[in-house]
Amino acid sequence: MGGLRCVDGSYLTVTPIACTDSAGMPYEVTLALHRDGTPYGVVGERCGWFLARLARGVGAARSGRGQARLWPDPDDRFPANEPDGELFAFRYRNRSDVVGGGELRCHLRTIPVWVPGQDGRGEWRVTRRAYMEAWGPSGIGMRAVLTSGELAAFVECLVEEAEGALKPVELGRNPIEGAGSLQRR
Image (cartoon, rainbow, N blue to C red; front, side, top):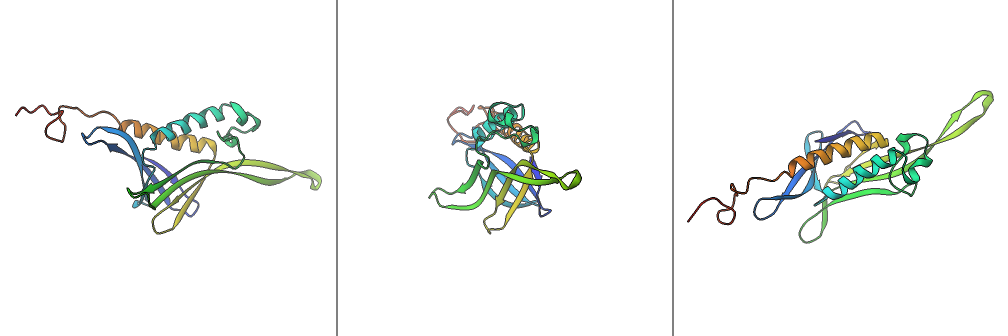
């Protein structure tokens, strides 16, 4: 499970949970959110593909591909072309398509910082950071500020765990009697 220390001191845990079809076969993942160990929400129905794509994109950006090469520091390199773009937004939706129950969102911000120099002169240093925000059903939010290296480690951990959750189960042990079962009638 992936986890992040948030700016308010709380700890956000994100755990991929396998979605299964009617025969019990895993086919995608959803993310369970916990705040300091307490359930916080379930978001991102069928989001595994998006996480894998983000992991590849952050890795490519850190290596200097595309527009990311314009940023000298690898920790400022992200896969978005826009300076303050959104990397993803996973929300909870129920069958009636009503929003509620939580949200996990990651967007970029460009932050100018004045670096004083000698003789009263200085320069602006511009950095980019990923802001990971989680919102529970109560409306209380959490925020973690990440470099691209920290985001890459977090997302790669989620992808690895999601791949483990999606390993196929033995069809002969189907939890549903009938099709796919080894039992004979």
